[in-house]
Image 1 (cartoon, rainbow, N blue to C red):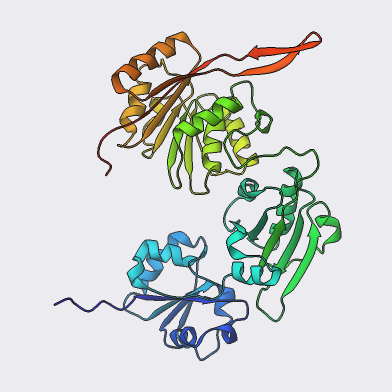
Image 2: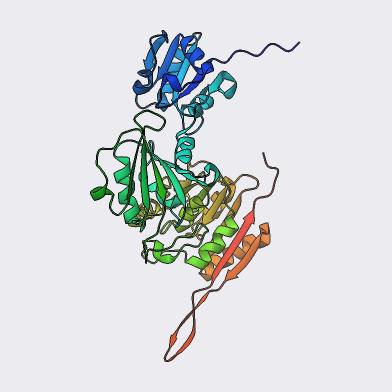
Length: 415
């Protein structure tokens, strides 16, 4: 006989700025029946006296406190308050990770995304979303494309001005900005402006509970950055150590990033391969290893500028610097191929199904790649790019150094 399922240990209740009156009857019942109610100070203040359970405010930082706080009230009827939809950038994710989804009963409220799109007449499925709650504003840069609609989940009253400054810096000053405050509450207010004029035309006093709606517009002459790999070389700060645009696009195609995957970029240079790997999907991750301090700092600046500030930069020489890194799904070697043990260390680190791509312009490294190609297979190609340049009063071709590229997938059963 199958035992009856255990009742959920925690009920997670979404609540909006409209507070108790905006809650569905099931949510109100759950809060009235809770022995312990955990939430933010602002959320707890929205509850009436009929919710008689012990009120426990979240400490800061919140995420590390989740296991201990839930464990401290084990065996009691616990309700957790969340802003809007608990599973939309909310505490519901942390609780599901810690307790497992079967231990939760989630009662959602309309999310800030739903409210904002309803007010603006924007289709939810066509609207980009970037959260800056507990995250750097630089990550917004990857979502900026001319004509794109983006909602920014704000970290507080200072976020709109921070967003406006970033838009101006990235060439998106003409972008229309609408700050939607206290969505769903009696005090809801909308503030309209552009990034170029935000600090002068818009009021400085912004409510801390806000969402920022962006109609992205690129300024005339601003560099256009594609969503596909192969950004213009001018998008990068570099000292010449840069995988050039056309070779970079071919390299990313061989690396074949997929959502959630991790790349090791060995010999980061300017960080272009790792940066464009991460730009293919918000969940893609990368670690770049660079021994030169100035280049490592430059990679960090490039990552911030191009919207992937989560790129991890490890300063050190491979293969020693690879020790302790998380298992990669793909490895790119852009330098140091002849360093003893490097190629073997990268190959050994890959799981079955992992990909390795190595580029070189030297005969010595090319011979090494040819040897590995004979032993392990894969694809060995030579990439030759020529650019049209003036030759007197005419036009001719200037050949860049050819790049030899070996790409291979590690065979074996996927775990």
